[in-house]
Image (cartoon, rainbow, N blue to C red; front, side, top):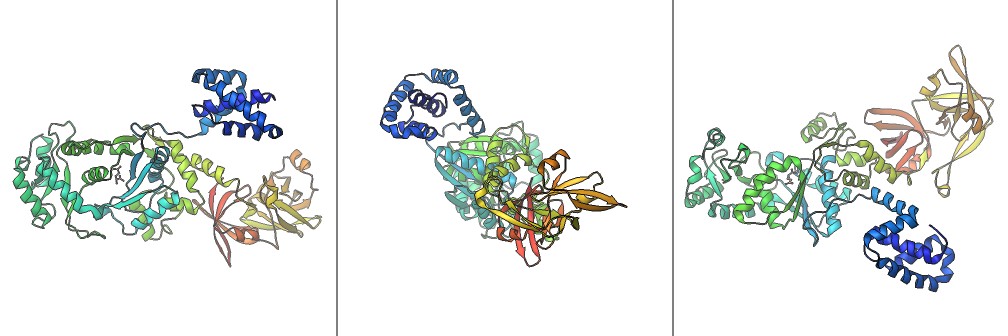
Amino acid sequence: MAGDDPKELLFLCALQNAVKHGGVPQSGAVIGMVMGAHPELRSRAKEVSAFAKEAIADVAVLSPEERVTTLQTRAPGMFAALSEKHEHKKVLPDLEGAENGVVMRFAPNPSGPLHIGHARAAALNDAYIKQYGGRYILRIEDTDPKRVDPEAYEMVVEDLKWLGLGITDTVTQSDRLHLYYELCTQLIGRGGAYVCTCDNEQFKELKNKKIACPCRDQSVETNFVLWDKMLTHGFKEGEASVRIKTDLLHPDPAMRDFPAFRILDAPAHPKVIAHVYPLMNFSVVADDHLLGVTHVIRGKDHIANTRRQRYIYDHFGWKVPVYRHYGRMGIEGVVLSTSQMRLGINDGTYTGWDDIRLGTLRALARRGISPEAVRNAMLAIGIGDTDISFSWDNLYAENRKIVDPVANRYFFVADPVTIVIHAAPHLTTHALLHPADEKRGVRTLVFTGAVSIPAAELERKDRAMFRLKDLFNVTVERDRGRPHLTYAGDSLADARAAKAPIIQWLPVADQIPCTLRTQEGDIAGVCEPAVRSELGKVIQFERVGFVKIDAVNDSGIVAYYTHK
Ligand code: GLU
């Protein structure tokens, strides 16, 4: 902090606070800041509080621009600190009309568990609701029985819980069919929809020629009769649908009189007995309206639906929510298609929905990605409409920030070989559980003459010396190709001078088997027995990476690789 004059300090703190938050700072915040950095001022509390009042008054009279330039010139360091923070703070762009709070929704189809692609809409909605206050509705969109997996209802709820979102209400569309039927009746009454009994192909042909089908001009009374016939099983699947009246001259044929309800007899819906189902555009509009949704965040792939949906709003004379369409997000390296996942699970290719080769949230959880990291990565991606490819590295960087300070460190030796170190003293060494937190304590490793080290390290012919981490240096000689290892003192400086790599090792007498599961396959190895106490936690296998301890059993440890 610039200068030691308490008056100046208080002025600068008040100024920085005002630039950061806008408006006039609270004296408590300013005093707290100064006292925190200068504890010696605590004995002068009265004086400091008087200075704070003066400082705040001095800042209050400055215009926002003057505040910035004054801070820049009088305390460039404090100004810089501010912009650094701003850069890292992920503020989403404002949503119009959100000042008095928002009602937003996340509306997945229950066809499988949620994956990383879903996390974007889920997290963005959540952040906006937190920003503006309001309600967050989880709406399960299950009006297409062909795309419903009965187990997904629970999985979706679990996944959102894991993600840590502030859902306030949950609705399931199959519970609400009567509401959609009622609204359809109203819409027919308003002349905004009609029952179409044309053969699909025939309708398509007419539509492509911008010609109305014969059903379009039926009277409202006829439509009511036909609608009733649909609901009372008078038509079979494919024999009738309800269409929204749009613009037959619309340049995009997909906009012309699109369907709103259809008849489906198979497959049976797992939750309701139904014959007539709304199509997405109708049920989405009905619910966005009925639930008072104010803002909708969805992918660009929904832009055509947004256009279709406007016709329905217009027919009813309802207020249209504010829409934001974010760009496409390509995600590579994992399987995301629900049908492909299900197939692979059924034929044994994948162990389940949390197999780490899949892009599900449960797979991420299994390998030690924290929900906070997923949320932060999604907010960093934001709401922009440019198409992007999802960066795993950014997600890992977010996760590293979270796990690095808490993960204990241990040794893991991949593909181990056991080898004697000649002329070495037997000794006990201690390694920190966490390099930045000595208080956490140490692990004890006892060297009694032989160690296990990664086979790959021994195979390298260019190694004249290496250092066993936290132990000592070893020279490598080769006798007819066979490595011969000899103690070479414990000076770290010697190891550095010789550019000796530092490698992991484990005492032969004190190690347990550990299988490290990675997306590319399993790595067999050994680790410290103390890893047993870390079940369910993310730890770091030093120089290997972060891992999550998935199972501890008699035969050893199963760990999942998280990231470097
Ligand atoms: N259930 C649909 C989906 O997941 C609707 C989403 C929306 O209307 O934003 O694609």
